[in-house]
Image (cartoon, rainbow, N blue to C red; front, side, top):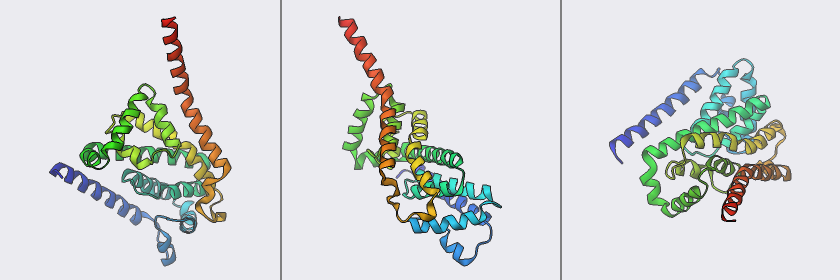
Length: 248
């Protein structure tokens, strides 16, 4: 690892640690049971307990709670750490629906963009050494969608075809422009986030994470994916029609 890359990683670690420390320091005094529940949830039960703790302090410390969730969300996305789904659910439990949706979409896009630039700065050689075939295959797909990249990124974010961490780290390597990546992510994560946030409104009644696999949620994802493809299908249809007209 080059000196510049090491310094960048050290700087990222220092910034993340400092932000988390400041957030923890600014949070109101908690009792011992509440402190034990103030952690990143890994299952529904932990999400329920954290939701109860945060809801207790939300009215008097609204912006502290909001900023805390936003910061942790961005950090998870930036470093490709699992767990953001339960933060989406918590957002639906704690905040009005449209506030939660905007929060989740914005934090997802910002965190993914940071991951994009980290990959661009220090990850290219490492990624190419581990998954060169997968990168090359996706690069060919990206080339086939030239001119429709925004809608293609939206489609990838809506569907589980590629994992989000792979999209984040591979996009700069296959030359997806940063602005298309950001806005494609912002709009693309909205449909699945809608499902998680809606589930959050009934968080205390949930029994497992299987809430996301209902027929309604599956239909929502499928319809959203189809809608994101329609502009691509339409533009290609026009191109084919134009080509046929020239040869007629």
